Length: 369
Picture (spheres, rainbow, N blue to C red):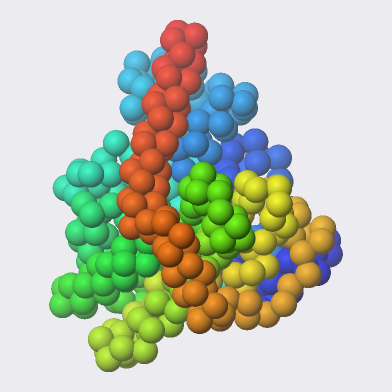
Protein backbone atom coordinates (compact mmCIF):
# COMPACT_ATOMS: atom_id res chain seq x y z
CA UNK A 1 0.00 0.00 0.00
CA UNK A 2 1.24 3.47 -0.86
CA UNK A 3 1.68 6.18 1.74
CA UNK A 4 -0.19 9.47 1.40
CA UNK A 5 2.27 12.16 0.26
CA UNK A 6 0.92 15.04 2.34
CA UNK A 7 1.07 13.04 5.55
CA UNK A 8 4.46 11.62 4.64
CA UNK A 9 5.73 15.18 4.10
CA UNK A 10 4.37 16.16 7.51
CA UNK A 11 6.19 13.26 9.10
CA UNK A 12 9.44 14.12 7.31
CA UNK A 13 9.11 17.70 8.61
CA UNK A 14 9.34 16.30 12.16
CA UNK A 15 5.69 15.94 13.16
CA UNK A 16 4.65 12.60 14.64
CA UNK A 17 1.09 11.91 13.51
CA UNK A 18 -1.07 10.33 16.19
CA UNK A 19 -4.75 9.45 15.78
CA UNK A 20 -7.10 10.88 18.38
CA UNK A 21 -9.45 7.92 18.36
CA UNK A 22 -9.63 4.24 19.29
CA UNK A 23 -12.28 1.55 19.26
CA UNK A 24 -12.40 -2.22 19.18
CA UNK A 25 -14.00 -1.99 15.75
CA UNK A 26 -11.00 0.00 14.50
CA UNK A 27 -8.61 -2.54 16.02
CA UNK A 28 -10.33 -5.69 14.75
CA UNK A 29 -11.29 -4.42 11.29
CA UNK A 30 -7.71 -3.56 10.36
CA UNK A 31 -8.56 0.14 10.06
CA UNK A 32 -5.88 1.11 12.57
CA UNK A 33 -3.21 -0.92 10.80
CA UNK A 34 -4.25 0.60 7.47
CA UNK A 35 -3.76 4.12 8.86
CA UNK A 36 -0.29 3.11 10.02
CA UNK A 37 0.53 1.73 6.58
CA UNK A 38 -0.97 4.47 4.41
CA UNK A 39 -1.39 7.60 6.54
CA UNK A 40 1.87 7.75 8.53
CA UNK A 41 0.03 7.29 11.84
CA UNK A 42 2.53 6.42 14.57
CA UNK A 43 0.47 6.65 17.75
CA UNK A 44 -2.97 6.92 19.32
CA UNK A 45 -4.52 9.05 22.05
CA UNK A 46 -7.72 8.24 23.90
CA UNK A 47 -9.93 10.03 26.39
CA UNK A 48 -13.24 9.35 28.15
CA UNK A 49 -15.24 10.84 25.27
CA UNK A 50 -13.59 8.50 22.76
CA UNK A 51 -14.27 5.44 24.91
CA UNK A 52 -17.86 6.54 25.60
CA UNK A 53 -18.50 6.84 21.85
CA UNK A 54 -16.81 3.53 21.12
CA UNK A 55 -18.87 1.65 23.70
CA UNK A 56 -22.08 3.40 22.72
CA UNK A 57 -21.76 2.85 18.99
CA UNK A 58 -20.02 -0.51 18.65
CA UNK A 59 -21.12 -4.13 19.09
CA UNK A 60 -17.57 -5.47 19.35
CA UNK A 61 -17.73 -5.32 23.15
CA UNK A 62 -20.76 -7.58 23.58
CA UNK A 63 -18.87 -10.82 24.22
CA UNK A 64 -16.60 -9.33 26.87
CA UNK A 65 -19.48 -7.51 28.53
CA UNK A 66 -21.34 -10.81 28.68
CA UNK A 67 -18.37 -12.48 30.38
CA UNK A 68 -18.00 -9.61 32.83
CA UNK A 69 -21.70 -9.70 33.64
CA UNK A 70 -21.48 -13.43 34.24
CA UNK A 71 -18.61 -12.86 36.66
CA UNK A 72 -20.66 -10.27 38.55
CA UNK A 73 -18.29 -7.43 37.70
CA UNK A 74 -19.34 -3.97 38.83
CA UNK A 75 -19.39 -1.08 36.37
CA UNK A 76 -16.01 0.37 37.40
CA UNK A 77 -14.32 -3.00 36.96
CA UNK A 78 -16.00 -3.51 33.60
CA UNK A 79 -14.92 -0.09 32.28
CA UNK A 80 -11.38 -0.76 33.48
CA UNK A 81 -11.22 -4.14 31.73
CA UNK A 82 -12.81 -2.91 28.50
CA UNK A 83 -10.66 0.19 28.08
CA UNK A 84 -7.34 -1.33 29.12
CA UNK A 85 -8.04 -4.24 26.80
CA UNK A 86 -8.37 -1.91 23.83
CA UNK A 87 -5.23 -0.02 24.78
CA UNK A 88 -3.17 -3.19 25.22
CA UNK A 89 -4.36 -4.47 21.83
CA UNK A 90 -3.47 -1.16 20.17
CA UNK A 91 -0.05 -1.25 21.83
CA UNK A 92 0.56 -4.62 20.17
CA UNK A 93 -0.36 -3.18 16.77
CA UNK A 94 2.01 -0.26 17.30
CA UNK A 95 4.86 -2.39 18.71
CA UNK A 96 6.81 -2.42 15.40
CA UNK A 97 6.56 1.40 15.22
CA UNK A 98 7.71 1.64 18.83
CA UNK A 99 10.77 -0.51 18.16
CA UNK A 100 11.64 1.21 14.87
CA UNK A 101 11.44 4.69 16.46
CA UNK A 102 13.54 3.72 19.47
CA UNK A 103 10.58 4.16 21.80
CA UNK A 104 9.70 7.68 20.69
CA UNK A 105 6.53 6.76 18.80
CA UNK A 106 4.24 3.76 18.64
CA UNK A 107 2.56 5.15 21.75
CA UNK A 108 -1.00 4.55 22.96
CA UNK A 109 -2.33 6.82 25.72
CA UNK A 110 -4.96 6.01 28.32
CA UNK A 111 -6.25 8.58 30.77
CA UNK A 112 -6.52 8.35 34.52
CA UNK A 113 -10.16 8.55 35.59
CA UNK A 114 -11.06 12.25 35.28
CA UNK A 115 -12.85 12.34 38.64
CA UNK A 116 -9.34 12.19 40.13
CA UNK A 117 -8.16 15.36 38.38
CA UNK A 118 -7.98 17.30 41.67
CA UNK A 119 -6.65 14.35 43.70
CA UNK A 120 -2.86 13.95 43.60
CA UNK A 121 -2.61 10.71 45.56
CA UNK A 122 -5.55 9.18 43.73
CA UNK A 123 -4.06 10.07 40.36
CA UNK A 124 -0.70 8.50 41.24
CA UNK A 125 -2.33 5.31 42.50
CA UNK A 126 -4.58 5.02 39.45
CA UNK A 127 -1.67 5.64 37.06
CA UNK A 128 0.30 2.80 38.62
CA UNK A 129 -2.67 0.44 38.32
CA UNK A 130 -3.27 1.36 34.66
CA UNK A 131 0.42 1.01 33.80
CA UNK A 132 0.61 -2.43 35.42
CA UNK A 133 -2.62 -3.61 33.80
CA UNK A 134 -1.81 -2.56 30.24
CA UNK A 135 1.73 -3.88 30.80
CA UNK A 136 3.18 -2.62 27.54
CA UNK A 137 6.28 -0.40 27.33
CA UNK A 138 4.68 1.75 24.62
CA UNK A 139 1.70 2.75 26.75
CA UNK A 140 1.40 6.28 28.10
CA UNK A 141 -0.68 7.33 31.07
CA UNK A 142 -2.59 10.59 30.60
CA UNK A 143 -2.66 12.97 33.56
CA UNK A 144 -4.43 16.34 33.44
CA UNK A 145 -2.29 19.42 34.05
CA UNK A 146 -4.30 20.69 36.97
CA UNK A 147 -2.47 22.19 39.94
CA UNK A 148 -2.93 18.88 41.75
CA UNK A 149 -1.75 17.01 38.68
CA UNK A 150 1.68 18.64 38.72
CA UNK A 151 2.92 16.73 41.75
CA UNK A 152 1.35 13.58 40.34
CA UNK A 153 3.33 14.02 37.10
CA UNK A 154 6.54 14.21 39.10
CA UNK A 155 5.77 11.18 41.22
CA UNK A 156 4.58 9.05 38.30
CA UNK A 157 7.60 9.96 36.19
CA UNK A 158 9.87 9.12 39.13
CA UNK A 159 8.36 5.63 39.08
CA UNK A 160 9.56 5.16 35.51
CA UNK A 161 6.10 5.50 33.97
CA UNK A 162 5.73 7.42 30.69
CA UNK A 163 3.22 10.26 30.99
CA UNK A 164 1.08 12.15 28.51
CA UNK A 165 0.22 15.41 30.27
CA UNK A 166 -3.15 16.61 29.02
CA UNK A 167 -5.40 19.68 29.22
CA UNK A 168 -2.64 22.30 28.97
CA UNK A 169 -3.93 25.70 27.87
CA UNK A 170 -1.59 28.33 29.29
CA UNK A 171 2.08 29.07 28.81
CA UNK A 172 2.68 29.41 32.54
CA UNK A 173 1.08 26.03 33.25
CA UNK A 174 3.15 24.51 30.45
CA UNK A 175 6.32 25.77 32.15
CA UNK A 176 5.12 24.15 35.37
CA UNK A 177 4.51 20.89 33.51
CA UNK A 178 8.05 20.90 32.11
CA UNK A 179 9.40 21.50 35.61
CA UNK A 180 7.27 18.66 37.02
CA UNK A 181 8.59 16.26 34.38
CA UNK A 182 12.21 17.26 34.92
CA UNK A 183 11.82 16.94 38.69
CA UNK A 184 10.43 13.44 38.16
CA UNK A 185 13.40 12.55 35.98
CA UNK A 186 15.78 13.84 38.64
CA UNK A 187 14.09 11.68 41.25
CA UNK A 188 14.15 8.68 38.90
CA UNK A 189 17.85 9.24 38.36
CA UNK A 190 18.46 9.35 42.13
CA UNK A 191 16.58 6.05 42.43
CA UNK A 192 18.86 4.47 39.84
CA UNK A 193 16.26 4.16 37.07
CA UNK A 194 17.21 4.08 33.39
CA UNK A 195 16.06 7.50 32.16
CA UNK A 196 16.19 6.42 28.53
CA UNK A 197 13.09 4.26 29.06
CA UNK A 198 10.95 7.18 30.26
CA UNK A 199 9.10 9.26 27.67
CA UNK A 200 6.59 12.08 27.92
CA UNK A 201 4.50 14.42 25.82
CA UNK A 202 2.82 17.65 26.89
CA UNK A 203 -0.60 18.01 25.26
CA UNK A 204 -1.17 21.67 24.52
CA UNK A 205 -4.78 22.25 23.47
CA UNK A 206 -5.44 24.36 20.40
CA UNK A 207 -8.98 24.76 19.05
CA UNK A 208 -10.66 25.34 22.42
CA UNK A 209 -8.55 28.47 22.87
CA UNK A 210 -9.94 29.97 19.68
CA UNK A 211 -13.49 28.94 20.55
CA UNK A 212 -13.42 30.73 23.90
CA UNK A 213 -11.43 33.80 22.88
CA UNK A 214 -13.32 34.29 19.61
CA UNK A 215 -16.63 34.27 21.50
CA UNK A 216 -15.32 37.04 23.74
CA UNK A 217 -13.95 39.02 20.80
CA UNK A 218 -17.30 38.75 19.02
CA UNK A 219 -19.08 39.97 22.14
CA UNK A 220 -16.80 43.02 22.25
CA UNK A 221 -17.63 43.56 18.60
CA UNK A 222 -15.24 46.38 17.70
CA UNK A 223 -13.34 46.25 14.40
CA UNK A 224 -10.10 45.79 16.36
CA UNK A 225 -11.54 42.84 18.28
CA UNK A 226 -13.13 41.16 15.28
CA UNK A 227 -9.87 41.41 13.31
CA UNK A 228 -8.26 39.11 15.90
CA UNK A 229 -10.70 36.21 15.61
CA UNK A 230 -9.16 32.90 14.61
CA UNK A 231 -5.66 33.96 15.61
CA UNK A 232 -5.29 33.22 19.33
CA UNK A 233 -4.93 29.45 19.33
CA UNK A 234 -2.13 29.23 16.80
CA UNK A 235 -0.28 32.13 18.42
CA UNK A 236 -0.58 30.47 21.82
CA UNK A 237 0.76 27.18 20.47
CA UNK A 238 3.61 28.89 18.65
CA UNK A 239 4.71 30.51 21.90
CA UNK A 240 4.42 27.13 23.61
CA UNK A 241 6.94 25.75 21.14
CA UNK A 242 9.24 28.63 22.04
CA UNK A 243 8.90 27.60 25.70
CA UNK A 244 9.84 24.04 24.70
CA UNK A 245 12.91 25.23 22.80
CA UNK A 246 14.02 27.35 25.73
CA UNK A 247 13.55 24.46 28.14
CA UNK A 248 15.96 22.14 26.32
CA UNK A 249 18.69 24.78 26.28
CA UNK A 250 18.98 25.02 30.08
CA UNK A 251 21.84 23.53 32.05
CA UNK A 252 19.31 21.55 34.05
CA UNK A 253 18.06 19.84 30.92
CA UNK A 254 21.53 19.27 29.51
CA UNK A 255 22.47 17.43 32.72
CA UNK A 256 19.42 15.20 32.40
CA UNK A 257 20.03 14.60 28.71
CA UNK A 258 23.60 13.55 29.47
CA UNK A 259 22.11 10.95 31.81
CA UNK A 260 19.99 9.55 28.98
CA UNK A 261 16.75 11.48 29.45
CA UNK A 262 14.29 12.05 26.59
CA UNK A 263 12.84 15.53 26.29
CA UNK A 264 9.12 15.99 26.72
CA UNK A 265 7.73 16.66 23.26
CA UNK A 266 4.97 19.21 22.72
CA UNK A 267 1.78 17.58 21.46
CA UNK A 268 -0.85 19.64 19.65
CA UNK A 269 -4.23 18.41 20.86
CA UNK A 270 -7.76 19.49 20.01
CA UNK A 271 -6.71 20.10 16.40
CA UNK A 272 -10.10 19.67 14.78
CA UNK A 273 -11.13 23.10 13.48
CA UNK A 274 -14.49 24.31 14.83
CA UNK A 275 -14.74 27.64 12.97
CA UNK A 276 -15.80 27.25 9.30
CA UNK A 277 -13.97 30.51 8.53
CA UNK A 278 -10.67 28.74 9.20
CA UNK A 279 -9.08 26.16 6.92
CA UNK A 280 -9.85 22.66 8.19
CA UNK A 281 -6.11 21.93 8.23
CA UNK A 282 -5.04 25.14 10.02
CA UNK A 283 -4.15 23.57 13.37
CA UNK A 284 -1.86 21.12 11.61
CA UNK A 285 -0.20 23.04 8.79
CA UNK A 286 0.48 26.19 10.81
CA UNK A 287 2.14 24.26 13.64
CA UNK A 288 4.81 22.29 11.80
CA UNK A 289 8.14 21.89 13.58
CA UNK A 290 10.63 19.18 14.50
CA UNK A 291 10.01 17.05 17.59
CA UNK A 292 6.29 17.66 17.95
CA UNK A 293 3.26 15.41 17.93
CA UNK A 294 -0.06 16.32 16.34
CA UNK A 295 -2.93 14.11 17.47
CA UNK A 296 -5.79 14.44 15.02
CA UNK A 297 -9.36 13.21 14.84
CA UNK A 298 -9.84 11.13 11.71
CA UNK A 299 -11.70 13.95 9.94
CA UNK A 300 -8.68 16.26 10.30
CA UNK A 301 -6.27 13.51 9.34
CA UNK A 302 -8.18 12.86 6.12
CA UNK A 303 -8.40 16.59 5.36
CA UNK A 304 -4.61 16.91 5.55
CA UNK A 305 -4.26 13.80 3.41
CA UNK A 306 -6.59 15.27 0.80
CA UNK A 307 -5.46 18.89 0.52
CA UNK A 308 -2.85 19.68 3.15
CA UNK A 309 0.28 20.94 1.46
CA UNK A 310 3.02 20.95 4.09
CA UNK A 311 5.43 23.83 4.51
CA UNK A 312 8.19 23.01 6.96
CA UNK A 313 8.77 24.94 10.17
CA UNK A 314 5.65 27.12 10.27
CA UNK A 315 5.70 27.41 14.05
CA UNK A 316 8.50 29.93 14.54
CA UNK A 317 6.64 33.27 14.22
CA UNK A 318 7.21 34.06 17.89
CA UNK A 319 7.26 37.86 17.68
CA UNK A 320 4.06 37.95 15.65
CA UNK A 321 2.43 35.46 18.01
CA UNK A 322 3.32 37.62 20.99
CA UNK A 323 1.79 40.66 19.31
CA UNK A 324 -1.45 38.72 18.71
CA UNK A 325 -1.85 37.83 22.38
CA UNK A 326 -0.93 41.37 23.41
CA UNK A 327 -3.55 42.78 21.04
CA UNK A 328 -6.19 40.41 22.37
CA UNK A 329 -5.43 41.57 25.90
CA UNK A 330 -5.54 45.21 24.77
CA UNK A 331 -9.11 44.92 23.47
CA UNK A 332 -10.26 43.55 26.82
CA UNK A 333 -9.95 39.74 26.77
CA UNK A 334 -8.18 38.33 29.83
CA UNK A 335 -5.81 35.52 28.85
CA UNK A 336 -5.59 34.37 32.48
CA UNK A 337 -9.37 34.15 32.80
CA UNK A 338 -9.69 32.26 29.52
CA UNK A 339 -7.13 29.58 30.33
CA UNK A 340 -8.47 29.07 33.87
CA UNK A 341 -11.98 28.61 32.50
CA UNK A 342 -10.78 26.19 29.82
CA UNK A 343 -8.98 24.02 32.36
CA UNK A 344 -12.04 23.80 34.60
CA UNK A 345 -14.32 23.13 31.64
CA UNK A 346 -11.95 20.51 30.26
CA UNK A 347 -12.02 18.54 33.51
CA UNK A 348 -15.80 18.90 33.77
CA UNK A 349 -16.36 17.73 30.19
CA UNK A 350 -14.24 14.64 30.72
CA UNK A 351 -16.15 13.84 33.91
CA UNK A 352 -19.43 14.12 32.00
CA UNK A 353 -18.08 11.78 29.33
CA UNK A 354 -16.79 9.40 31.99
CA UNK A 355 -20.24 9.28 33.60
CA UNK A 356 -21.78 8.62 30.17
CA UNK A 357 -19.33 5.76 29.74
CA UNK A 358 -20.28 4.34 33.13
CA UNK A 359 -23.98 4.61 32.29
CA UNK A 360 -23.48 2.89 28.93
CA UNK A 361 -21.57 -0.01 30.48
CA UNK A 362 -23.96 -0.24 33.42
CA UNK A 363 -26.88 -0.65 31.01
CA UNK A 364 -24.99 -3.20 28.92
CA UNK A 365 -24.11 -5.26 32.01
CA UNK A 366 -27.72 -5.27 33.12
CA UNK A 367 -28.93 -6.37 29.69
CA UNK A 368 -26.32 -9.15 29.52
CA UNK A 369 -27.44 -10.79 32.78
